[in-house]
Length: 226
Image (cartoon, rainbow, N blue to C red; front, side, top):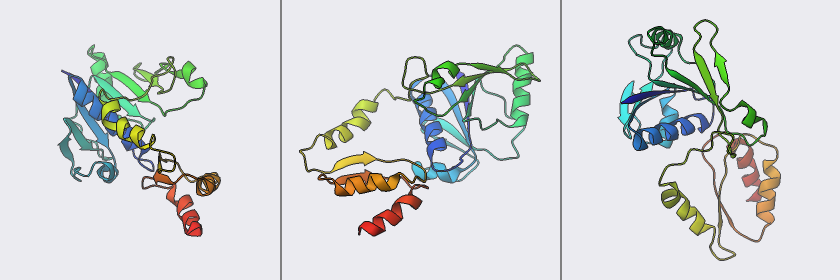
């Protein structure tokens, strides 16, 4: 069975852990892979997956979740495929194990998972490789995107039936029914004009906003509306 290690550092909001958790779950659920997710902030994962425990190691949704500490264990062997999410830099001791694996003829596949973008330059950078100067290990840059020249989007096999149907149903209700919108963003001065347009519109808005930094911009606006 092929093994995968995904490394995730939580910077802010829940985008980093959200993408990594969803990717890890899909790999474990739909493929014959042994998946291990390393995350430095388990509390962030718990916010989006409440059954998460704040312990060093646990099994969740057919995959292993490990707390990524600065003192990384030296007994961990590298996986067949290693994903470095959003240039988080894998532990140096883990990298040394990858170098040893390469020397024995079992070089891991090393992927740097980049952020999703619709910009044109992503097509030219997707699948580009970088050679590690000391070891010669190849790191491939994977860019998600919306065209055939990018890595596409995470999409589980049952995503349309399970996740999209309720939203599609809600957004095809008769005019005047609440429009369901999911909003994710950072602090943003443009949010004021968006909220103002919604408030002046004729259709009620039901907006889903995850806990995060964007609330610093939205809450004062809502106070003024009430």
